[in-house]
Image (tube, rainbow, N blue to C red):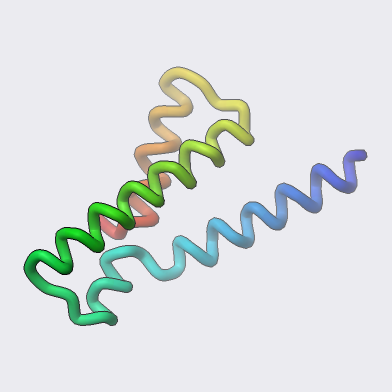
Length: 81
């Protein structure tokens, strides 16, 4: 049982680091987005990052200020802002 939990944790960390490697800001720059397209892309990317970070906080069983702090940093890292 511990091995399964450990494997899941490493998988989640690998996925989150892969997402964090290329932030929303970097992706927008690569795509050379500007104006309304940039705004739309950043809003969607921010929303996706917020839901991903919230689910990670739930997996870690965080609540209250710890959850808020984790989620805020996670979203900031994912969006590159």
